[in-house]
Amino acid sequence: MRGDAMSDSAGSGAALLERLAAAVNSHDLDALADCFAPGYRNQTPAHPARGFTGRGQVRRNWEQIFTFVPDITARVLRSCACGQVVWSEWEMTGTRRDTSVHQMAGVIVFGVRDGQFSWARFYLEPVRAAGAGVNEAVRRHIRAGAGPRR
Image 1 (cartoon, one colour):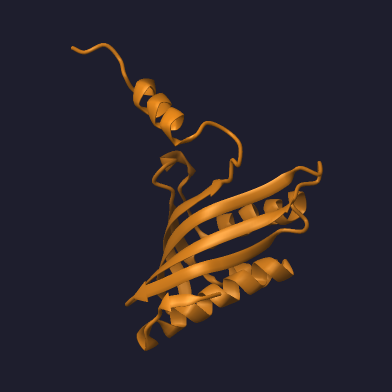
Image 2 (cartoon, rainbow, N blue to C red; image 1 turned 90 degrees about the vertical axis):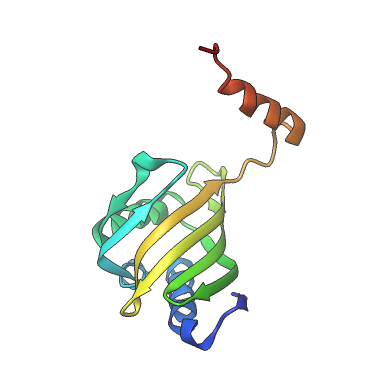
């Protein structure tokens, strides 16, 4: 993990990110769950229906991930903190049980309180290496929302 702008006051956030990445990489479900407060709140702004509350749901999510991506690894590419807010860029890779590649990339913004993550805004998404280039993607995105004017 590399902290690009970590301050001393953000040390607990940096240490917590390291603990979380180590728990993922060692597939230690108990250590992973212990990184999160019991009332942890997760918001996924690009997919609002995926938001949830509670350490128990974090545990259930990761139990499934460890089962279906048994060799998953996580890397924190960059991170920085401002007070009790930690910004982190993640890359997660592995092989699913059906031998297909599992790859996620994105940003998670965490709130830290009392040595645990208390909330997050989650922007981690599946990597799609193939597909339309930028020009076509922009055209499709703009046209997808184009309806009749009123």
